[in-house]
Image (cartoon, rainbow over the protein chains, first blue to last red):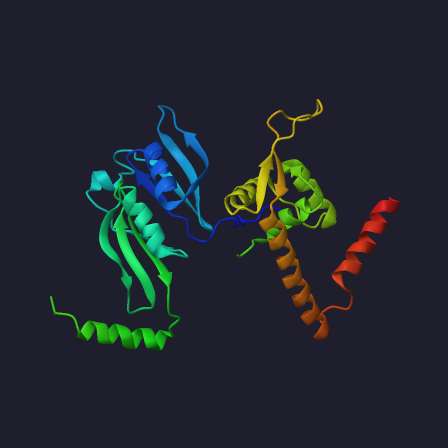
Length: 155
Length: 123
């Protein structure tokens, strides 16, 4: 029997549009430790589908098609942050930065119980990377967020 | 390490020795008495993940008979794969014990599987 939800996928799977799938897959492999399963070319040579494994999750990478599927480079930014939990945030963050990622927020211990940092990859996608260091209840999280807000300047 | 059900099935299938993708599918079919079928997509994604996680490794088989596909790849358990399979089997055995204590099971699953194999052998 075919499972309607394939066993190796979680409910949510991102599809990243990039200006160059071949380069991006190479970068995601070197910088983040992703592993390619397959890629399919469209007529004309563009890659219309590529599936990668990263930790226990999978994501898709596709070449941009002007008009319908613009990449962050064409849009001048992205409204999406991809969040990774990994065993050693410092190691992966340094590896990604060493491979050419831009640091948007350096790794530090955060009030919500994560050691966490944010970077932008060379293809314009934004990643937050974290390792959990404290297991907090929703109530404790709320109190810490309140205290944090009170310490901030109002914009 | 979290194991998907398919990954544990592949570990079990390779516990008897190296095999290729189709052989793994047949082995799983046999030891589950046909109740679990690993489709090719699930199988090859599991194999990819297990190679990456170091649970299995690809081996070169020099000789192959004519019916064999030249591109057929053989896999075997690594030391880590074997210890992971043992740990998961023990974890499941402990859960089965807990289920029996709570009268959720009347027979052990091992007894059940031996019986169904005997029936198969007589056919």
